[in-house]
Image 1: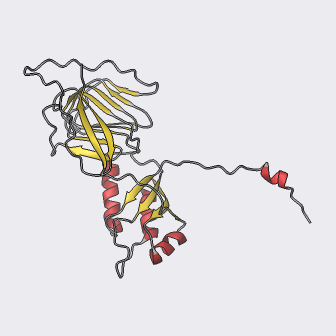
Image 2 (image 1 turned 120 degrees about the horizontal axis):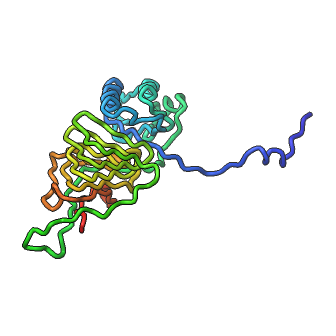
Image 3 (image 1 turned 180 degrees about the vertical axis):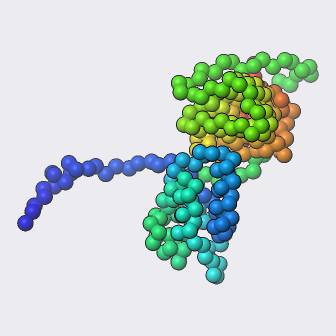
Length: 261
């Protein structure tokens, strides 16, 4: 009879808590083909956006208690895997849906706190010292670029995309309409931003966007976005400005403020 001492067992491993950065897929339909088509379009527009990221399947936006409710969890998991996502857990699953998810190897993420995305409102604070005359605005002070930041020194034309994975992005020339700059960290544009700028692409809520002339088609931080359909106010439109994420009781919102000389 083999005897394994407690001392030998304890020397084999330690049990510790760990934090894992995950994304959440908030489903708004049970149509798996529609989800697959939408993911394919996003991956075509932003190649490499997903890189085997662990994901929570969030069903809280669906009425799972409705009689006859059904969603094909295994088929959904297959679609996610095909688009470089790794489904690990499910949130909001009950009854037969939970039984199906558990049988597919998913864990229960009912207690997971998922950051809420809301529509962006106008959040430009008034200038406490308004001036009747239009004073020239000096460009922002030079930014110390973190080691490893990606630097682009040529204008980006329509259809071009730059993605700084796991680091900041510095653009020394104009980002034209139809061009897209993406970064997991901050985005610094020492020229005019007229295309799309997506900072904190993998959920970094501390990321910011800086531009010497803010005229974007779209700005986004950690999934919270604003498009040109919701025009920027004159205090920041076409002027040096920064964008950051502000948390409040109603969710997260983008704060766009002028860069002061």
